[in-house]
Image (cartoon, rainbow, N blue to C red):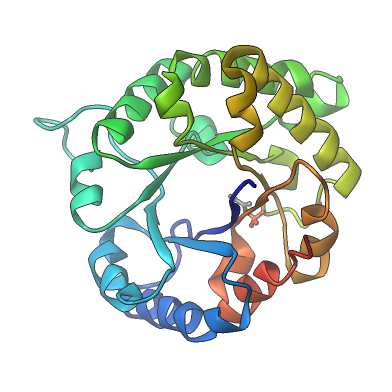
Length: 252
Ligand code: PEP
């Protein structure tokens, strides 16, 4: 049985006190959703310590949105994986399309970040996904395959067993356009096959999340698909009520 996960990527939103309120709202309503759903919130770095406090005693996990590629040292403005782990993070989002697109993150950088994450016992939520041009040219399978081969294929089997993948078509992020449930299933099944080519039966255990304008009204249909194990949620994670309602989308 694969883990069911609903992870919230708050991006660069909320002030610290607002983030704490949001986290408290998730904790307060969490009991209304099946305990089989694993909720994760990923606030900005500046909020991590305060949000960790707000999550104390609950089963809502904390994640960061990024970490540095180096362990420590003269890297002004960077935040090390050891630092976020020390604040209570269990997860770290790596390779989000916004980081690839706006901050030039390449597979070479992401390999180093993955190494840092595992060295600090963090579970990476590794994002893959094609842009609109690539989708329209029918290249989406090749794009995600390369993103997996260049990074995930470098993991040991033990590391792979502590990995979450998020498939996020760039054309669906923050645009209101969602991949159809069938489109999501098609590529999630393909991703699982690419993972199985390298890791064999362990691929059946890897949670693959869908991300891209996922909301309470479309989550249930997408999550009902066999190879969709939950969602990485952006905009709708900023309201506790919506975030929790997405978790209620699991019927299986
Ligand atoms: C994201 O950026 O991870 C995301 C899925 O955003 P949104 O839900 O806002 O499309």
